[in-house]
Length: 113
Length: 220
Image (cartoon, rainbow over all chains, first blue to last red; front, side, top):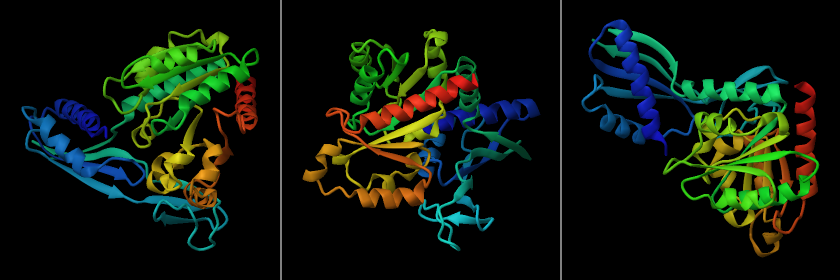
């Protein structure tokens, strides 16, 4: 439960970005969260509302796009979506797999004026 | 107007973790990040490990807790250098805290740095500290459903220590269930059955550590 710290990092990054662009107000922040990243979206949006009061991001929407975990099966050479955190290839049933994505936590874009 | 950002939210932490990793690599110090629930036996494991490697490995410990220096005091009694970080409510250690604390050690005279994270099976896994390996401890009294319930942490570990294995006969804990769950969550994981307080399985754990320390030293 470190969502407040994450919300605060997001605010730092987007505030710096609008300053670079010479903009005043943030309307929307689009965040991508992988299923392996242990962030709770509701807690994050709640923290966001609280810490953005009185900042250029006040009343902005924090959109959280959740992405699944993708892994690659080495013998099959194919990517698959990991369900229930089980890194087992759905085709061959093997465990010789590697995570391709799923632990990301990044700001993709913002909407600002 | 829409502006592309593409910025990693934990980027600041990850940059510091990379600096820590580079510094440890230069000095040839092997570093582990120990993660578990409160009470799984992290500090007891470190006390026993310190006794077993005495005279063979130069070990230092960074203890993470919300408050108190109880753990650092316990470990220091076994003749290893120990520093306590108090997060004052924080649920995990971060790379910045480790960087500051690492500066207090003479890394040239160290083989092994052990970081005992705050007792928590969720948050610590998201914060890279610059370690070589994450070691997760699951103790038998906690129950065999923990890997299934906290997969994020178990997925990122290189070693799983099943501690308090002496409790197995009086518990309904299923080793098979843990092995099956872990085969799906983290197939390459090494699982060691130990009892730190009774000294069971500790030789294999120390052998694992010593082999990694040797590899790291050769590369430096």
